[in-house]
Length: 464
Ligand code: HAM
Image 1 (cartoon, rainbow, N blue to C red):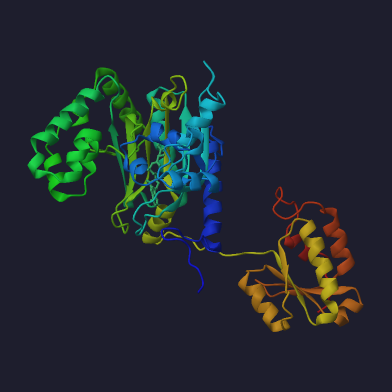
Image 2: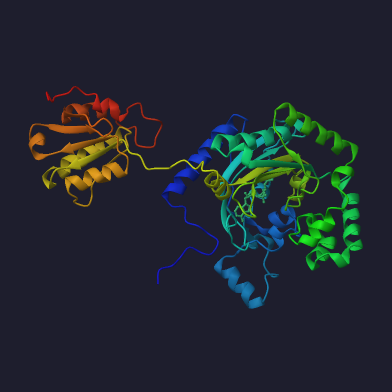
């Protein structure tokens, strides 16, 4: 029986894989304009990085992490009936998100030196959460994220939000299909008292609320705002709101962020129940949601400030903030809006053989063209000339270069422009001389100064 990809994972077939690559390139270019540099951290980290960073009481850490063990440690833990005996460094988890690992790297490599400019980093890659799979909710999904460490000012928060919205704009997610929610989560000065008031509120309404919320009252009361149970949501509407309980510093910071967004013309909805699912947030939080065609997984990106995270993974106090956006959900949003552009394979040229006698010469020409930086293909299946033209069409070749024994015996090849259907005979030696001037470019290298039209514009030998 053939195997399928594991539940909750999806193969990125070429069209989507191309889109993933072009999306990350677009992100890299856009984020570079805001001063961001790339970073890549391991796909797994010591479990403690996530338990300390994201918070033990979150669903992500409590229920959704994939544990990774070497074969030996797996056997050891199995024999002992628990992994208690394993050392911290032997307890590893696949990253459920990128922030904790990036902040761990920033601390480890001291990327934010005292008094230096903030570290502005972006990343793109797979994340893993053992969630119940459904449309827009995968166990392996892909995020593009940014983290800015060392910035306290509200301008950094506004810049972050603007950058996220500009990204969606650039990708073509229609603004009218989106809403941007923002909130402030307060800080150490105001949140503990607020948290206690929410806990007390839940206890006061215990008989109306679900079991899970009873547990949340003790572990993570603010998560009750996200309870999917309808009665709980209704009850929580009357719960105390963080925005009525912010300390002066947090209020001033939040007001400044909003004023900057207003000035930049970014519309948003203030949602005092937006708490987000990760425990590291302080002050500003935000979430971009799509209103059309996404079902229950409407959040396509989100983030916020986390001024205590660096300390919780062993660093010195370093303010931080960031966001991550889900690639698969963005694709669903583009699809729902009919804005998913086609992603087709395109090559510069296709070298077709009239018969087998010219195959070696065709191969030689293909090699020379590729070495000059052109993207070319040829047949490797012994197909008829007609089928080769079909293949050329399929890969959207701009020109087809036909090698036939008669023309080849005179050192010529026929080039057809697939758009205009114009044809001409060119001298193969002249074409190769031209190509050799660009030799060493290699396909996919720095953008080649040659394009297929240069070859096509070789003097016409054909007097038709
Ligand atoms: P998050 O809200 O957990 O935040 O995830 C960010 C985005 O990842 C979501 O808005 C969603 O689009 C996508 N996503 C999350 N889980 C799944 C899933 N199971 N399947 C498909 N897509 C998913 C974070 O991860 C934070 N690290 C963001 C951040 C960066 N905050 C500060 N810096």
